[in-house]
Amino acid sequence: MATLDLKGIRKVFGSTVALEELSLSVGSGELVSLLGPSGCGKTTALRIVAGFEAPTTGDLLVDGEDFVGVPASKRNMGMVFQAYSLFPNMTARQNVEFGMRMRKVARDKCRARAEELLGLVGLAERVSNYPHELSGGQQQRVALARALAIEPAILLLDEPLSALDAKVRVDLRQQIRRVQTRLGITTLYVTHDQEEALSISDRIAVMSDGNLEQIGAPADIYRSPRTEFVANFVGLMNGFEGSLQAADTVVLGAAQRPIRVNDAAGVTVGDKVLVLIRPESVQLEELADGASAPEGVIEGKVLMHTFLGSVTRVSLSSDLGDLVADVPSIRALTMPPDTRVAVRVDPVGVRMLKR
Amino acid sequence: MSFWTIFWLVMAGLYFLVPLYSTLEFSLETGQHQYGLKWYGQIFADPAFRSSFLFSLRLSVETVIIGLLLMVPTIYWVHLRLPRLRPVMDVISILPFVVPPVALVVGLAGAFNAMPWLLSSSQILAFAYVIQALPFTYRSLDAGMRAIDVRTLTEASQSCGAPTWKTLVFVILPNIRTAMLGGAFLTLAIVMGEYTISSLLLFQTFAVYMQYVGETQAQPAAALAIISFGLTWGAMMGLFLLSRRRGGGRGAPVAVSR
Image (cartoon, rainbow over all chains, first blue to last red; front, side, top):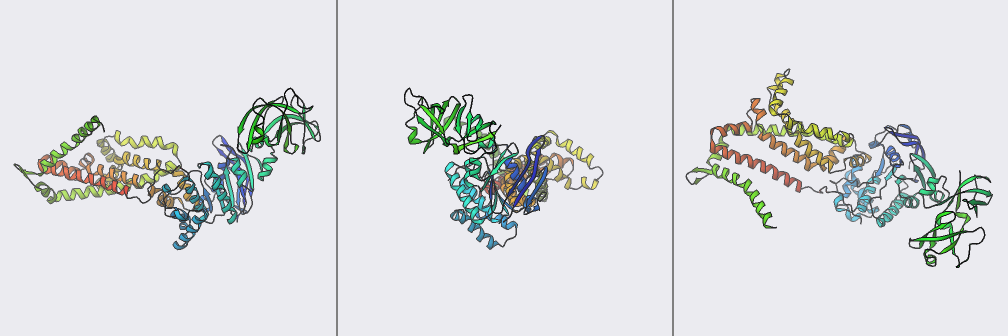
């Protein structure tokens, strides 16, 4: 299995800078997702790795070997595209065989390997079907089998699930992960769907405006975002201006509401900070009629509910501003809109970014 | 179907069929209320018919080959790498409609003045016909390329290890086959019926022969018109059958998920 290194990759289209000095390493057998909004440069990075675009500057190394200038057809990288990309004139099996035929693999070996791979992606019964006879999900599975058939050094996936419906997307991403883990192929996966990235990746590289904002394991990215962009893009965050009052206490907003924090690394007492609180770390307690929140506790009023299944997202107004809390749906029933609540924050779920 | 739909369909049918029927009847009439294939036999027995027909057929094939060899890679490259040139290509492709064939012949004579061997060779006709057929070849191929995702298919093919020429041969061409056939048959129809250029350059093509027969023999000319119509119709049916016989078809990608 191969390693992939992007070193200071910069890409400029006319006057538009698509990538700013992107450096990224993907270990052997690792699945790294490039996650970001449209226009952040993630697909450009993938296309540079695939050989469809040349970097303006920077190095691209596969197993330490310079790949800049190597034609796409000689890179031995399997790719699954966002658009359905099966060759319409070929059956599923012929599509999978195509790469092997280009490599002059014996016909019977091509056939056996194609059938094995189509079996691996659950399409053993559809080998003779043409693309127009397959659903979108099936076409993408054939495309995955085709990409794997050439035994690629690197597998590249460019938003392969974005054209599919939600149920198929979940099934197929699990299948992709299963196959990738089983074959141990180094994989670069581009997506704008944070849930997809969080569920499938060994590491996630979050990108914004051509820059790499943060790279890390999914749990680290979610729990410890290093920038406001990452905090807002990966999951939902409540954000408040504040300042660190003591090693374990931060005060929020003009009201100077104190909340406890567990981790104040990188911040010293007196620093102005952006305090980030995940909705699941916000705990609500109904207040009796006429009662006020205890001293030092934030008081809020329920504005609306968004039912998400097992949890309900409760939107609140408070003297700090608006915030959201994820509450078990069965608990949310007891606090309909206009209910006054005491808002407590679990210190474990509080992050601070120095201003 | 409403009354008016049927009415206009019948009117349109009569508009096309009455002249055809009249020509057919005239071509079969051998005497007072007598019918036969005499004029057809006369046409087929005429060595000038065979030689002019085969000459025009050869020119058609040459024109199709030269046209496709020029246009397929050009249009493919424009779709793949230079999509901003498409409006320019659109304008260039309709120039043959603007330039009269007489002007084209004068231009060709001037341009190839230094190469008299080419001017006197029938090859010059094929080159001129490539220009004449350009609007049809270009539009047919352009429509074919628009119907497929040229860029994604090319990149998918390259990622499988295929160089550009193999991508073109194994992936692109099979998927624009109908467009190529359409362009080829339109070219064939144009070349088989082209009169002005071949007449001015003094070549005895099928159209020149038809014109000669039309001037001198009324009923054989009608038979010739029917033969010519039959050939064109046959070509169109050939296109229709070939496009239906496609193995996988290349319909639009299915957008449903299962």
